[in-house]
Image (cartoon, rainbow, N blue to C red; front, side, top):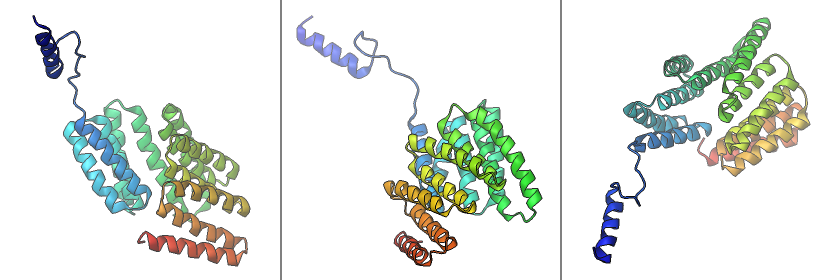
Length: 281
């Protein structure tokens, strides 16, 4: 065999990926649609974190279609969990809880205990938020204590997953806040924010500091609440999250107002309004 023919054989083997000793084995698995689904899901969550729920739902529906077409259990559950979160944020609460329950059932049937726990965590967090509308203080305390117990159990299940753990600690902090246990509430939310920041989920970390500011404000620690809001603003600036920035400046105006600092309060409100107009809200 001539040298040219030898090279030609090696090139042909490489191009056709046949069983030449120099060619690496090729996997038979295909992930194109699954990778597209993950990308669409990321875009949905990104838009939702900025309050763009209509756009988020468009990306989510495509992610869901791809998840269904590939029959990928994990993606099916994850798209369902995200859909529940977007529905809840859009005010469609009953639909959101049905979506999370469907996600939990599918995750359990598919042998995905972590995702089943994440679906429950989302539902518990929403339930804690809805306690703000409950006028009976005793009922709030009893429900919040039960949610806290449930979340501590879920944390043991999701401990190996930083994102799921962060979601659980945030929900735990909200439950502790309802119980008036402000130090425990801040501790839990700080763990959440730290996990998000270490995983470069800066918008979620910023939201965590926004919640810490709320906890401190309710406890009457106005100066520390303002510090938490400044931290939230700095994180949202890094991701150019106008929605989060407007919310934090609005909250800063509220805190200044409670502290009796009228001039600073009005300046913060104007800043929030400027950002809101700039992003078309």
